[in-house]
Length: 638
Image (tube, rainbow, N blue to C red; front, side, top):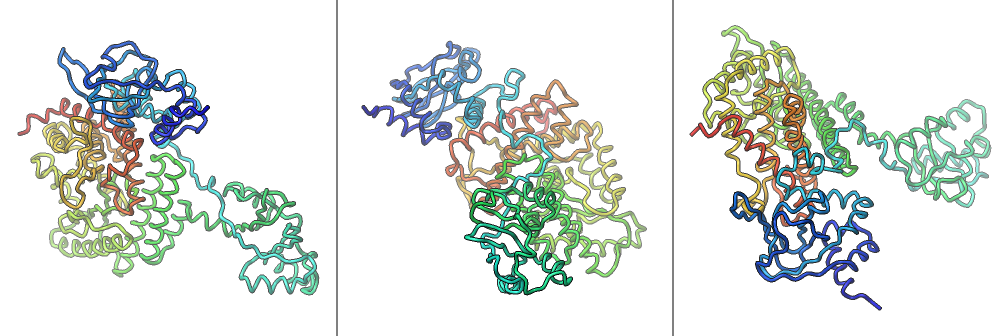
């Protein structure tokens, strides 16, 4: 007899994470064991400090209010509605509830048995990941030693890795190989190859591979006179053919070609020589695949002769980013790769621009990247932020020297724009006379920002404290960097102003944990992930790094170094680094999907899992801002 109630429960659960990650048979077993519970408005589901129930809950209809008592004062924490999970603590921590739950209105709950889910968590890592993220968003202190590793458990994308994924890609091969009978002559086979414009032909009987002839065989065997062009193809074909199945990876193909000293591999139905031909893979096809390899792209950049070539390469770099993310390559590795590509493109553009001017630089200079490129976090093609510092020169030579570098900078920024990096809306570019100045002038500028800070100056200058060497004289870069850190030493008032500017940035969530979205304008009702989530973590890492005199630009590297310097706060800084990695990955995916900067996110278009994942990153933001305020007393600034 059909269990229609269980089927109805199944139909509901299958549309919500993490139940949508479970096999039908397993989910049906869960549905058969669900306990249906009804509560009237304001009825208590469980109290704060209650012993764990035997279920956690998903809301079928209505809404649930979560609350806790602090110093005998009741605080409402969140409102959960249809499809939301709550009461996860017994599943994750096996502890009493840290908060209470009450029906916000009439509510129907599905109680999910804990005993079933312990096995499911083991068998389905993504279910475990989702539940932990969901639990963490309601955990008071997700980065404490007690919960260490739980908030971001199983999120492979935040772990360091230095291995390329290219060799794990499926190799692309020709699915229309040219074939011939073993009875035809070499001359006829050559005519077939010429007509099809290919460099190989497979000798086959009933579409089963018997051998292969390549242009190299014709050159070395026929061209040398060893065989007549009128002989049968069987006399010069290579046999047996090296065969592989359709899902051969790049690594397998490379190894096979090297091992067997061949230039072509035959792809067959099951990978054996006894089944039908599906395609042919040449070493040339692997070279094309390597177009999605950073080493190949770097080589192409080095020899690029015009900006259009560089633009094409940068498009390939975006495709590489997308492929990396699809393969779940860690974001830390992706930022390193794409940053090197962006730097190489900029270097090449500078060389092309100098050649175009027809005159070498009159004195030493350094091209600097600011902002996300300066931090080596520019995964998407966003706007450019750059500056130029040139060697100090006598006053009478200054105008002419500056004119040269302004001309050079204008050409460079124009070419970067052509490649895809839009002009900076705030005009923070080396083509702006304000940001193309001598070392002496740069030192003077930084000294003024640091010794005489105001909120207006801070908002203008903050991007300049992430400057990074790109091209030119590294000694100039080091001199400038050393002077900046000398000025900052013991200047707590400057760090206080930086903190004030950071804390003026609105929090990502409202009182009831709803996303704070744009209220008007082009991006109305969208969430600004850059300003509300990523920037606070970037700014905080910068302030702590300046405080500790760390000459590190990368946000991730800054937090990792802070973990070493302040071991008592290592879990806290680690949670910030992990949150940043997840947010950066999320923004990049959004940008690639929408072909934009990824800055604004349509919250309503996100899945429940993605909304939870985002929320799980916001607690470290709130807490590091509190830490900044306590450490640097920003409240003293009016």
